[in-house]
Every structure is written in structure tokens, then in C-alpha cells.
Image 1 (cartoon, one colour):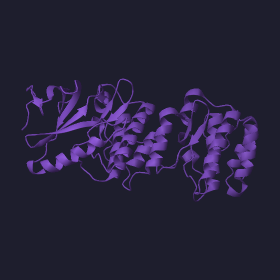
Image 2 (cartoon, one colour; image 1 turned 180 degrees about the horizontal axis):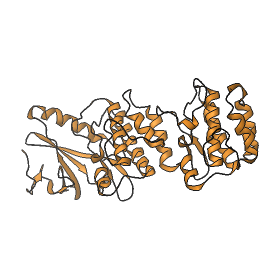
Image 3 (cartoon, rainbow, N blue to C red; image 1 turned 45 degrees about the vertical axis):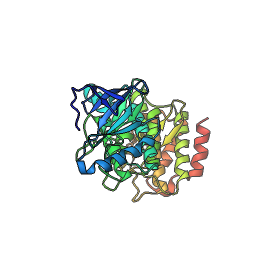
Image 4 (cartoon, rainbow, N blue to C red; image 1 turned 90 degrees about the vertical axis):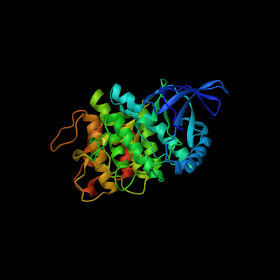
Length: 356
């Protein structure tokens, strides 16, 4: 039976219903057996689907993860299941963004790290959430993000659907609106990742999504560092070049996306080249070569290091005023003829000397 929100009564003789939480679809309750606050939610489905919904809801009671709002109990009342969940003090991502403003990229990335880890844990148990959206992501006063909404009949049985929905949720977090037909443009890594997650061909591997979100949660893109702090010293730029070269040589295929926005720098100075996405490369970092190749990646690396040390991307006839001893290496990397660019081994030796 449907319980009116004004009623004060018990479910299963122990959960005393109190006031609505948030939009009213969830209610605060007091568990008189365990003496604790809980949240309860009626799962509204057609009567003929009640048994199926009850079975599905009971499956998720075994889910345990720091970023999942636990379903503690499932109660059958009036032919419908009621979910009894742990009570979490916090505000939904939807309410937070609408009441204030879109989240800064690092904070949005931290939300993504939490939600992705929750989904990975659920998928490992064969459970698809199916309703990942800003209303089902809770932000706590301590900065944690938790995914709620488990136990409600899923709209999909495919894990990739949850990843698409996570991309749409992150889009809302940084843009303040759903993605619509055209996700937000921008070269920054989070928006590039979001566009890739929403691509019709499907999201990138979970490992790629996780690596990018992990790095964005703590590190800053190189283009932002140069934009806010100005050009970097040649020795530091050489060290960044070495880190990027390591990443390029560790993979079997050309990267095809080397540019400042795809290089994240930690507070310690450690640089990381993000995995390639479908977002493409800005014109200033697109090599003149006809096809992606390792030599083309080296040209893009040269253009990236040029920007880091000079503060602006390379242009025909642009002088190198700040590069110092790094200048000959940059000129060699930016040769139009791929055969004249240094080999990776030669480049490593040069950068190693310059990074000291």
C-alpha cells in the first residue's frame, strides 16, 4: 500500500517513518531495533513486477563499498518493496550545482573517482546501477561522493550504460547542464574524457577512465600551469619532456594526442601523459606529417615543450627567447621532415643533460 508522506507509522514494525529528504522520494526513518537513523524509499513498480523488484532489491544488500550508500534491508509492504538504506548527511550533486555553480575540475574528477570505483565494485558482482545521474550522487560535508539509487529497477543491463551515464553526470558537474546532443567543447582533459565517454561507439576502457580521473583529481594540466604561472624554466621543461618520452616509448602504437592539455603535472613536478582519447589535437600541436607515427608524436612533443618554455605555441619564425640550451633540441623536434627529427634515444640523452 502507498503510504502518504504525512503519515507517521512503522514499516515492518521497526522503521518509524519521519520527514521527507530532498525532493521527497526518500524519507528519513528511525530504526527502533538498531537505534539509528536510516533512509527509506518505496520502489514503485506495477503489481505484476513486485516479486521481481523485490528479488532485485535484495541482491544489492550484499554490496559493500566506501562510495556506495548501503541498502541495509528490503521490506515488503502492500505488495511493493521498500529499501532501507544507511542515512548519509549530504546534498545531491544536482542540488549542489543548481544552488551554487558548476564544480571545479579537480572536485568533479574526485566525484568521478568515487562513482567509478562504486560502479566497478557493483559490476564485479553482476549488478548494473542503471540510474546514474546527478540526483543519485551524494556529496558529504567532508568531500566524499557516494552513489545511491541501488535496488531500484535498472533501466539497462549493460555496464557500458553506467559509464555513459557517469560521463553525462560529470558533464553536468562541470557545465551545470546535461550534455544534450553536443557535449561541451574544450581541450581540457576532463571535457575530452566526457566527450569520449558519451561517444556513440562506446566509452573507453575502465582503466583509461580511472587513470585520467585519478590524475585530474590531484594534478594540474600543463596548459593551465603555463597560463597561470607563466613559462617554465628550461630544466623543468626538459624533465617534463623526459616523462612524456617515457610514456610514448612504453606503448606500442603512436599516441596522436600529445599537447599541453594532456600532460598533467603533480605538485612534486612529476609529469604524466594521459592516454589518447578521441578528442583530437589542437592545430598548434598537430604535426605536418600525413599520418600518426612516433615521429609525429615527437613533433607534437616539441611544440608542447616550446609552449611550456616560451608561454605560447610555436609559429613560423617565432623566436626562442627563454629556451636557452633547450633551443637546439626544440628546433630539431619541429623539423617538417620526420627523418631530420632526433631519435627517441638521442632525444633522451639531450633532455637528460638539460634536466640536471
